[in-house]
Image 1: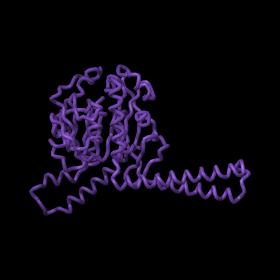
Image 2: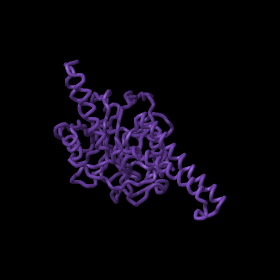
Image 3: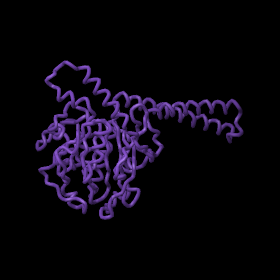
Image 4: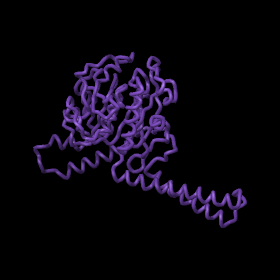
Length: 365
């Protein structure tokens, strides 16, 4: 039920971008890689970082390198395949520092200005019982006709990568995750983890601060969802994301290859189409936004309930609406106006939970 809700537009809680803006996408040669995200959030983050950097001018001049880093938005991208156009566009258009990772691809260490490449992949957490145990996703990728098996020596936890790059004290403004089946374990590690250390991976306790997630979700047997246990792990990851304050910004359907369109029985209850892949962008609510979301949506629920209560009362008393006296009709209309105001206030910042968001505008460079 958790996964059915997540894959159904309007069921899982949604959120708008900063200032109530809608997500946009970058124009790319490979159109299937165009996905919506909060472009305004990156611009705001850049401006905020520049202000922070300027406010410390003249202090700790020996830390110039760190100051330069903190004045740019920070982007992690896992899974390049054969193209780095999206990563290069993020650096060119938004001035972000981009760190790209893929253990199955070969790129130079510096792909382009502000775009660095590392041949690392991500470990995924696979057990559902709450123990922080890990395995590589090489067995999954070995089952897919599109990928080779990955050398476990090339895999790291997200915490290890953050620490290796010296980003422990920096916010990751956007993390793109297209790791062909490891996403649920990685997201569980990110959202469910509360500070435990794993003896084999001591850096798992490092929980980075991430503002946006762009994730390709797979449901195929060859791409990670091999058993009922994997269904439970995926559901727990989604539950933790919601509890941790992540809302959906954009949801777009994509397709897998014909060779990968094989599913276990439980996955067939989740997917909407034969080659179902879902690309979802999520934004992390700040504590103040989370409180505001609850308060505003509470007003929406209260107002909708009052409309139904008054409507039911007058239907019982007078019958059909066209038979209501003016006093009853005016009372009902006043409750409807309150409901519309509450919904409008909520939707200024948070997406209506009943609306599917299909069309994403292209960011105007």
